Image (cartoon, rainbow, N blue to C red; front, side):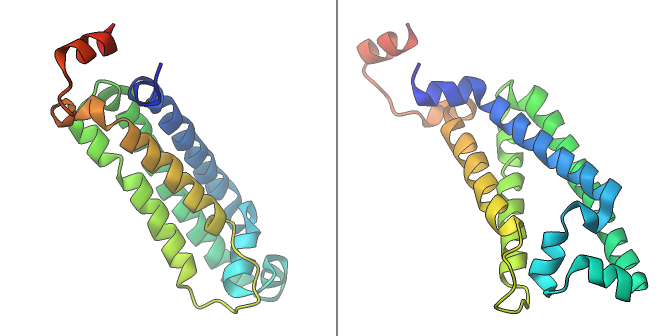
Length: 168
């Protein structure tokens, strides 16, 4: 089985696994707030999250609430992507393939927001600066490698003998 055929038939599994990972991130953020990943707060602000909670509890509550709200957004996006992947994407519906490009765009946005944040130069790198590009590449490659399933008219015309051999 060639690599393109694998992604055409099984790429949905990669996308489901990634969507479930996002779902778990969202649930973690909803339950724990900023405590789910305090390295983000430290990487963006330079402040230790435990110190913020102790010295500015009102601010910490606001940040925790915002993180929980963001977790809710992640959870909803994950549920939508799972619903699209499980039925229309697996059936080869073009709109599903196009719609799932929201996920790599989301990864670009997350990376860009942290990259362009006004962060002190000596701060540790926030974890999304590493995870977003990894997810971006995995999702984009999966979508690119499965395009023939969704756009069969874009396939290069092969000689009939080659086409018959490939279909066998």
